[in-house]
Figure 1 (cartoon, rainbow, N blue to C red):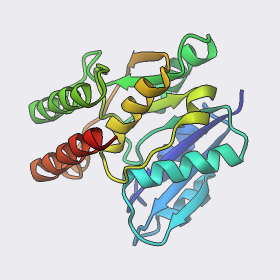
Figure 2 (figure 1 turned 120 degrees about the vertical axis):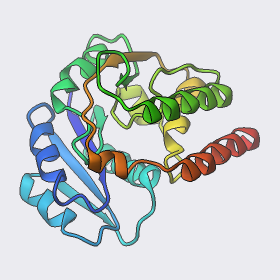
Figure 3 (figure 1 turned 30 degrees about the horizontal axis):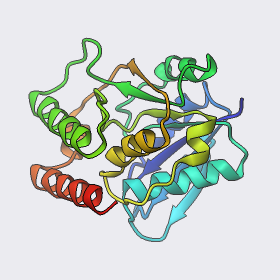
Figure 4 (figure 1 turned 90 degrees about the vertical axis):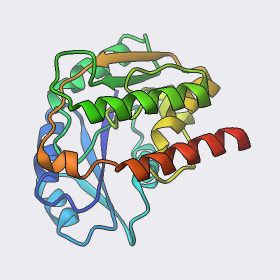
Length: 222
């Protein structure tokens, strides 16, 4: 199966090259979606070996992810891996995430940063728990780390996924897609590395509330 990694990136010139290089050890190609960056994210991603698609302006993580998904489909990808551009995820976990797809046991695989002994700040655990509860309320599916950007879409999920939400709420939308299409779900414990940088760039409480409201509103409208 042809496996493609998609990395949405916004002003990540210092970190995305290493993410690209590490991912290329485990996938056939990497697509970086430069989501309106004002730095050299696009240039350094290309130098690291990625194909780059640029958004003229910052559209949001969900929009960038969907752009990458559509690009991967055009390359006739069979399997899609999504991961963040800030070195939070370990590409060494990609084979473990791919395994349920390769064995025909799942259509989508969610990484679970809380499934092993990672040093995760209490505030992040709290936000994740709230996100999981909101996601369960909106979708009826319980995913232990619903807001993590590290996922694998198998052939069926890659063909059917259609994200409409442009911001961070797209993570919950993916769970809803899984419920609606009745995808088989697997969850795999993974490593996570938090730094001062990754903690600073995460969602604020105010943005988290806005995201939650968008998710709930969208769930009632569908």
